[in-house]
Image (cartoon, rainbow, N blue to C red):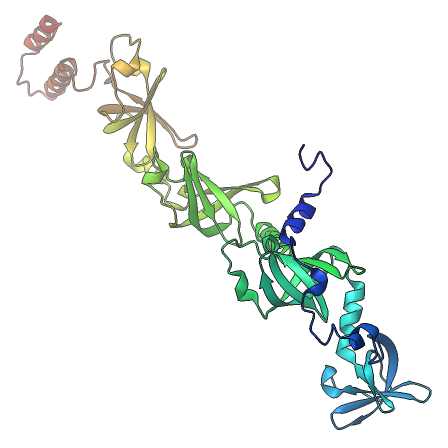
Length: 407
């Protein structure tokens, strides 16, 4: 039967394991505290709280009126600021010397803090020791315990490095009758991390430029840490203006990158980043380098049933429709063209607004560019041009006859 089905709380199970063989009530107990006098409270006071009014200052002591014919003395160092006559405070009765009660303002504050503790509240505690299950701490004069799993979100942390430090913790469990207090520092760190994450995400919006470090690479893209535990995904299509086949050939884990926020989804839980948007836009050069009916050499990057995509400029692809590949009907384009093949193509249209370029492997007269038919056509066109200027150097009849005979 599972712990959920049996009604067992996972936290209770974790704490029970950490406390196995540990007597919380004995933690930090000194011989003096175990003495009969300590147990019976013969020193007087018994850690009682009593209101008092500052009556004066004598050297390093503050004289306090506790009531009719009842005075006490408290060390001046226990006050954050030098007290003024007439100020009222609550003091802890620590004992009695002659006719004066020994008072503690700091102890009263600690006791008040102890009395106000409840599950979920935050408190400061000093780390006093370490054992097999976790850390021992003190909240004022009261003992507390922190299981190792609740010390930090950092699993590589050397727990002993916290010895002697005062840390902020969340109360997991409190039982004053058994003097049992369980604390968690990890809960505080988790809350701080979530708050930092929320603040960091709140400062982001589409268009924000960020710097980050690649943390993980997948076939579909790269995850980038942009600070405060915030991660975004750069999809493979958003890495570069040029087509990327394998992400790990362009990016490496640990690499520093610049990116731009494209989209925030699910309240910032998913962040889409882009890198190619920070590169110069190659389409800015298209009107200057590509012209309708102009010929260029390109490389086949993709093949589909309806045609092939040809990169004619770095980062710029055009569509070579299947009907524009050959003078013959093509059933399977993959048998005619291959990825990476270089082709001479003619630009038939350029639409910079829609970012579309149409290509043809046929010249204006329908011959495949670079074929013998195309060469003969070029020769005839040149001869006709020469004849129009009155400088015939070629027998047009012979040329036409030659072209027809080859067909």
